[in-house]
Image 1 (spheres, rainbow, N blue to C red):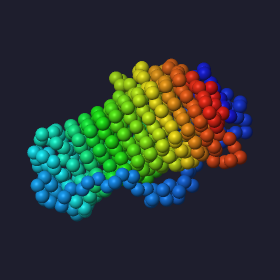
Image 2: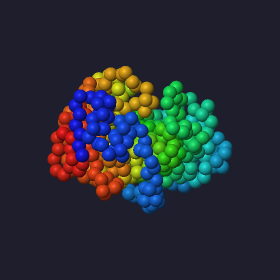
Image 3: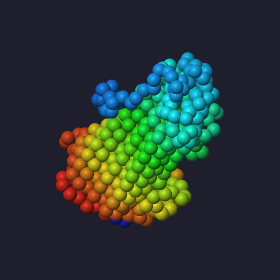
Image 4: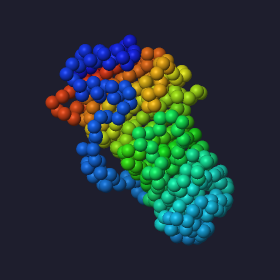
Length: 443
């Protein structure tokens, strides 16, 4: 089942669908859900047990990163500066003193957080360091965020800033303790920004891996204005019902990789905002969550173009979207181009392939002109598996700036009910196809 509408407007799409889909109530529900960014009706909890089994068996793919020596010259253990591993004593001051000592050391140094539980408020580890040699951060213990939101002025919990050659590893855990501040149903207006658990700002040539992030108050990790940074072997988890708990958000960065990781959260597993160039997301297991997203784009003035994003070898299980590009109505002109999604497995993911240029989760965008974000040169290749929704390919582009050069190659997405077929829908999109096409394409 395929539909192609090029006159714009959700209302025309809806009524045409009513005409062509008589008796297909489930399909109409899927269509309206995707257009309105509504979570799939019903539950996807039949995927919980398989996902939990995969999560339980997930392991690092790389060899363990080098650990700090137990003591000696250049080793700066936070407990030697007064940090208490009791989970209740606020230890931010001791952490900062240990960091300052490590950062001012003339040679190679280690910033060490041993086993135990450490309570921390808002804290920022600043560079550059002496001789431009960044300490290696070795996290063995569990860091627990202060729960009181009044403790956060910068809207981030742990920040690393202006550092070259940063490494973070060790097998430890960052616990954002966010359960008390998650808003049921999400925030609609006048929303207070909640703290990101781990933020990298103006960091270059960095490697962050083999750590765990859980239950952040907002994004688990935000990478911004960074270059040549690799995030690998990280496990990020929060309940499906937690709000705005994106796994990793990347903005205004160049040559960032997210690889070999497990992410199951209450929002996007990986989201990529404006100003990004040359990003790679590879071998990521995503679910639960809202899928892997480019955007949202066009909400703010003076956003920068997004180009050169490659998502490959990923599996999405029980997510409410698959691989998604989302832009706001009423946006200024902006270019979003040269994206490749390939070798992706959908395991009961809803709306596996989606371009949504009517994105407006607050439902307050009525009357705004169409999005002017220009989406072009997008390749979907070897996308396969099972869709939770009957609408498997949904390309809802903007009447104000239609999508150009959208390529669908070897798409094979079945519906969860083998007695029914998946469908595709296109609006204001110039699409070419090759290889197998299931559902039939809407070119």
